[in-house]
Length: 368
Image 1 (tube, one colour):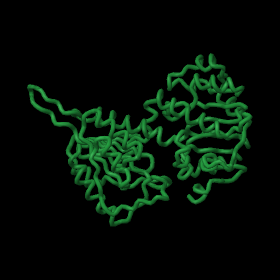
Image 2: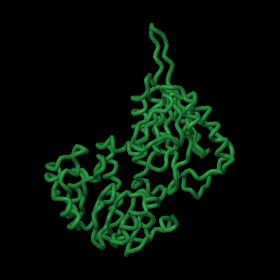
Image 3: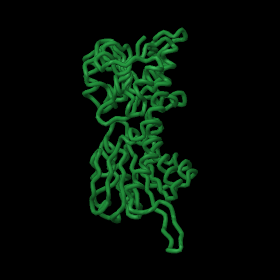
Image 4: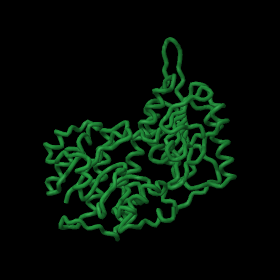
């Protein structure tokens, strides 16, 4: 069995295999191939991989010789029929990638389709990367803010603590809350799911609640589309709290659908100059209508930062988390004798399998 790891492009700094983990695979008599320079952006040199028993090759050689390919973003190159790809490519919205894999006859797995269950926590790529993004979002916003986060008392006077509004109390939102509180900010958190209220309060945040939200158990813990009446009340409540905030961090996303519009042009115009909006939903439609993905713009004196890939800016630890997820997932694909066994009855393997035998096999992706 040969596993190949590709070097990521387009500014991606993470890697899905580190030298210490490559050594573990080699001990299991698995051949490990890495594209030259694959780990450099994560501070893992080619020499370290070679010392661990991996082989450094060209991209073309890795693509040709590997039975299983590890990557964060699927390669643009054509893949041979029957090759196994383990990646994170957003199949619910990334139709071109799915069509390409179907055409090539690739057996593909997308780890962002992991079911929300206790057993699947060890392979939950979304939650792990959201943790990194939530933490880094606060640091980026704090750096852009022309003031302090904590309260300062000195002979020259008292500086009030910054007020932070977080929209969405998922993993990213809760991590942002915890980090902002550690930095001394006063934090409010809005979410349509009443079930997260206790978590917000336990982390020292104030929960902003709008009554009448639809909170479906069938959504697996994710937010769901709300009624127009609720959206109107929600917009009014968000504006009231946003205009008092120094920093607004938006994290609200709905799997397979455009991110909800939460911050309007009118709200931005009402926010005090010097404030910061950091939109973590920038790549899925944006929570602020003025956000531009991967850009920082200014409107009415407010800095609006669009960044959906903050995890890549913390490549060392983010890569460690990714590697564990990929290897935990790989363990599910082998039987007790160490032989590859693509168990279609396993819930995790089944839910993440997108294409096989030249067709789409995932029911959610079919529906999308």
